[in-house]
Every structure is written in structure tokens, then in C-alpha cells.
Length: 369
Image 1 (cartoon, one colour):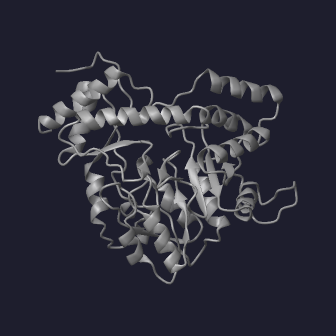
Image 2: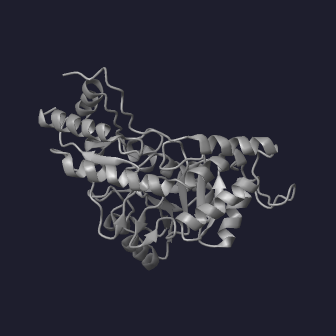
Image 3: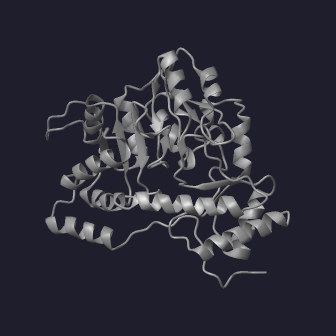
């Protein structure tokens, strides 16, 4: 059976509509397209809606957000920051760019997030911080990680790139660490076209991030520190504001789509949600015990169903980062890298799309791909 006549179901599909286009046109009509009133409004609205009112600072990418958050928190040469290896490379890259050392530890196998026991074992006298990733939209165990950080006197940061609206025990992600970063890349649960948002524990840290994003100055030509040009434009902020009004509804659709897949998929390990956690399903990530790459190929070629493998190469084995992890053994990370497969779960899926995804997975996996 082939399905080449069917329309391809993409693994992700950014939703850009009339509201976003009108918002951009309105900014262009003002002639004020650099960072200005739209950015300020977006920061306040994001803070109020997603992180319990914490001060937020908008930047030009998620990676910039991580980098500036780390710099603002004083991370630099000689410091160690504990991070997962099973994530996008930006997490560790941002640590390395400060001159600090990313220390990779293993994940727990159920939720794909940092294993608190592994974190505790990795702490040394040089450890300055722990930075979990709320991977695929599921929050890390912030209760356990917060207790470890407090006991050892180290900071807690959050990579919330994929977790807009996720919560842990009733508290939104982004409201736990000294700072947290949300990505606004096109394939995330909401986008500003490109960009990032940094939520900060207090105004002092937020001011440092603002300085660093703007060449080290709050007033023109009054440079206080050495900074970068990591500002968000009003054009991007206008898109983000339009998306912010819709993201809660999109999240509910993602959760309904995930529930349908949970109920009907066979032969694979579907995502598990921890008690007291809210999963926002940036990705719907399953485990395929054998032949994952062949499953990917057959889903695409026979059923026109797209999927993604996040992440096939753990950070500690990447050419760019392996120098930080000689001879490191992370068995759960390695196992996940061989087995994970993310299926479409985005809000644009129709009922027919969901049924085809189920048919495809159950047929391919059931056939012993």
C-alpha cells in the first residue's frame, strides 16, 4: 500500500495568519521597526500570561536568551554548569560561550529530563548552576532539582525553549530558576518569527540582561558593560503578541491530539505525564524499540506522515562538544537517542490526519519494521 496521492502531514506547522500580518503591517506603518513599544508590551504580556508576572526581557533568539541569562548571572571561566546531553546543542553551547564548562549528566528514562540523582553525583566545588531542559514540553522535576541546588548552594536556571505554558505542581515553568529562556523560533508552540524571552527572578538580573542585549547600555552612548546586539525588533514582537493571544487554545488542541494518539497507538511507548505536571506537547515523542530509522522512512514514503528524531546524536558525542565529556557514559541518553521518534501533534492536524498517523504507526510497527 502506498499513499503518495495523500497530502503530506508535516511534523510541525507554524501558524501565521491574518492577525500576525496585520500586526506587522501596523508596525511598518509607524516607521518604528527597531526595539520599541511593541517589545515592551510583548514582554509585559508574556510575563503576565506565562510566568506569573516575573520580569521578562525579549531577545533575538532563544540561544541569545540562554547566553545573556548566563552572563547576567555571572557565569564565566572556571565555572561548571550541569546540563543534559539529550537536548539541542544550544543548551551546552550557551554555557561554553561564556567560557564556563558544560557538565553533561544523564536523563531519567520516563520524561527525558535531567535525572536528579545524576545531577547530585556530578556536583563539584566548581559547580555554579544546574540548568535543566523542559524537554518536548514536559517539565523537569523542579522539586527535586530545586532541593539539590539549595542544598549545595548552586543556582538553578531553566531552558524552557519548548515549554510555553507547562507547569510543575501548579507553578509555571520559567518561574523556578534565577532565569529561564523561552524560544520563539517558528516551530515552537508560539513564535515571533525568530526570538527568545528571558524571565528573571528580580529586576537586577533583568537589568543586566537588558544591558547585555543592547551593547551594554540603557541610555544611548552611556555604555556600562561590554554587551552584544541581541535586541528583538518591534516587527517580531508584534508577531509574538498576536501569537500570545492564541497559544493557550493551541496548547489545548495539542493536548487533545496527544490524548487521541495515547489512546490509539499500539506497539510503541507513548509519552508519560508526571503527576502534578502539565505537558504542552511541543513534541509528541514515542519510543520505538527496534528499527526506528526504518519506521521514519516508511511513515514518510508509504503514508506521507512526517516525523522527527530529536536528538539522534547526544551533545556529549557532538564534534563541537565532546571535548567537555571524554569517555562519558550516559546510558539512558544513548538509549533515547536510538529509540525516540516525534510524531505530528500540532494544532493544524485534522481528525483524518490523526487517524492516518495512527494507522501508519500501527501498521509499520506492527509489521515489525
